[in-house]
Length: 462
Image (cartoon, rainbow, N blue to C red; front, side, top):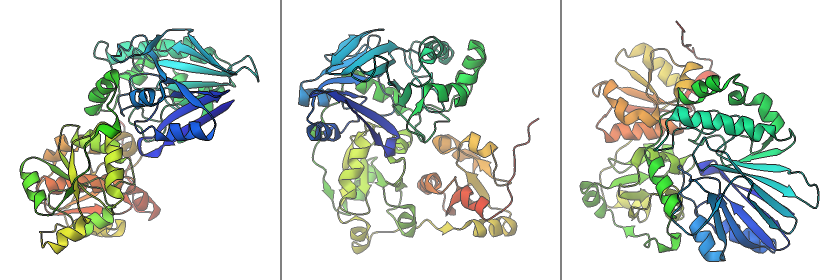
């Protein structure tokens, strides 16, 4: 039997393919589906089944395109209300091909329609060897329970507790757990970077599974939820109807430098996907810098939404189609085009250039003692802040930066930092776009601060 995990680092998303005797099933496919078609060809398989563990909210799935290109049937939980041709599955339903047996468990909680898939190689053992958990159970965490328009987070958390304790935790300890996401995903808070585990390991190590009672679990999971990105609801609806094929998107246009100001005046945003150091050396005024190297698409969706026209500025020619692909994975399709020949063309056209200075943590330490007017913006998450921060800094999490800008004085200088420098580059560009002029980005972030053994303040609990 063939079994493979496909991991998409930019979205911290895992999908799977299982195959036997020439037939395959794909679980939770990413939007660009060629990776599965190529793997199927390489292994002599024909994709006949496409399974969605739930209607994903953090990315747009390729289930509809994959089915159209292979003739496969799509399987989704009976509570999904899916509006595309599909098989609605319920507790105990099965798919069998060759030596591969897939059995469905209904596991509401993250969403009402959530399912998990037990995977058995019947040639090896009559017992399942793996559980594909979707967003119900992660490595080190569980799915967030705030994605239903009809149920409160506390109601969903209660359902999630029941699904975990009445179904998943009754499985043998040796069953391997394969979730749909890992560390960096916005679907949980404490996900591990490990890409698989076992039921037994999670029973011991997963903080959420150690809650002593249902009420304790509900409080733990539902009462301290991080802010939900606005695009989540839209992506879930796209997945309910099924996204259009990527081939249906219009061609990516080349844009001359003189076109950018006109498009900006009409509401378009210049999205610069170059590394932060290149952006800092000079960029199109008003640009937002979200480097392609990190959680690019997730931050673009969270901060820019799906309904804004974007103009791409990329590091090289290959960066434009790659940026567009990653944006499409979260449902951002309104890409007006890209600056042909990048920032070099902008320079050649004698267009205005805006810099974003970068400083070291040693520079920051010196400036905070010399300049009483300096503001330090820490754009990490609250949990990171509580583990240690720079004395006098303001906590302004990146996902809340638009609402928090009012806490900063636009006249005074601002130094922005995060954990390593990625999020702070984004935040600093947003501050420049909002009209702040004395903004600097701290290279290396709080990690570099600690490495330099500079003083760390702790949260004092009352």
